[in-house]
Image 1 (cartoon, rainbow, N blue to C red):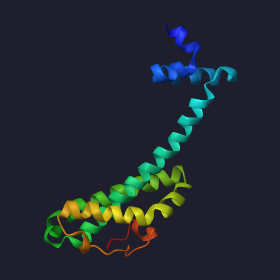
Image 2 (image 1 turned 60 degrees about the horizontal axis):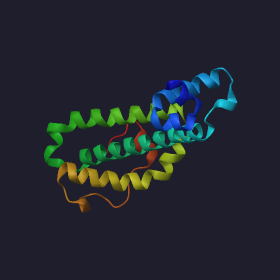
Image 3 (image 1 turned 135 degrees about the vertical axis):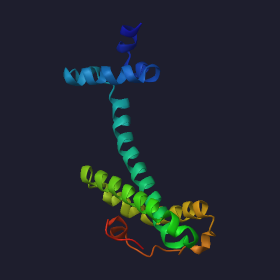
Image 4 (image 1 turned 60 degrees about the vertical axis):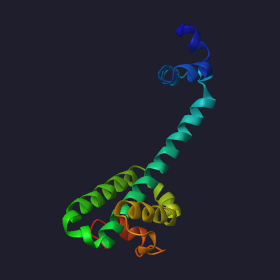
Length: 153
């Protein structure tokens, strides 16, 4: 049964993804390029890039959310400041680690910055129960400042 699936790589991709990966790696290691399921392999490699971009977008939205609640949620600031600052540092460190591995993702962050800001405002509004219009319509800091470990609003 497995041998039959392996013969048909496309079918294997649809029926046993893990086995498809293992067989694809084996084919590549053996330089058996004619047996590689190129269509699905290309799709998977492109998906890796898309997952990285989505992860960066999510991290930036969460970073912005916590910067906003630190700056605007006055009634909870003293009690939660340490937690929020730790979260801010955590998101920054994760973003910087990803950028060290893939510097081209910085272009993605620049392109998505305003959109991430707007979504970060929505998250901060829900988190804090502050009205959405409590937050500025435009970011008050640049992406560079937001990513700077020494900067807080």
